[in-house]
Image (cartoon, rainbow, N blue to C red; front, side, top):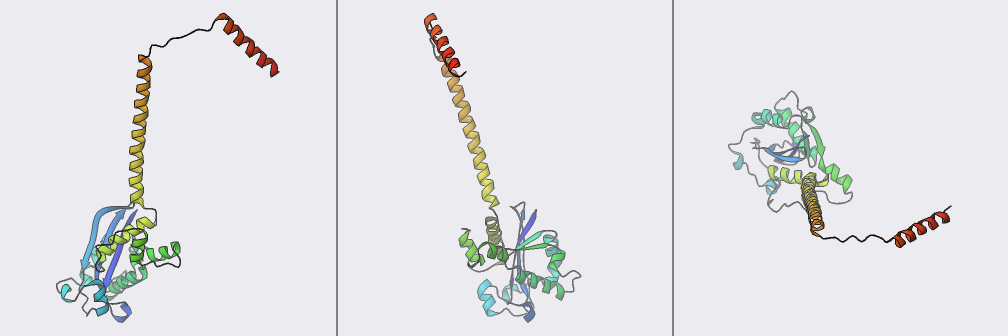
Length: 235
């Protein structure tokens, strides 16, 4: 199963107000394991960035002076996410912006679901933790995912945190794998100890000079009589 944790940063809160995508970050997982493949790009929005948004992600328009436009990176982005399950926190926000960008450039398939499936971790978290705070920061704390390097929001670092939170929320496959390896090692050690103990016992028995004392005729007769008495009682 191929999954991609995805996050975007934008010039503001709503594409309906003309806001644009300025950063995309993706982290690939296959069978719930990190592959090391990433997709990360900054994008020139051809408009100003709201001050409130800039305080969140720390990206200014000057930072994007030489960045490509979305239309220039659309094909490579869609190729990276093709046929994967996108793991997104508050998917409506990111998907809405990406579809807006695809529509602006006149892409023949502007719907993200034409390229990938989408799993919204915010909806999942609300079902798992109703009535609690379910922001990415809150989930990092709840599942003890280290977010200490996150001074500001960034698409790539947030994707990495999201991937780790998602794995913890849905069973912690990485931890389970480590536990399985530890269990295997423990089983091997236990088997080794048992084998060693058996060898020691066999060696010890071989070294012993055992004395065998046979029953006397009187003792054997008494034993037979007792067995016959027990047999008669059970008839």
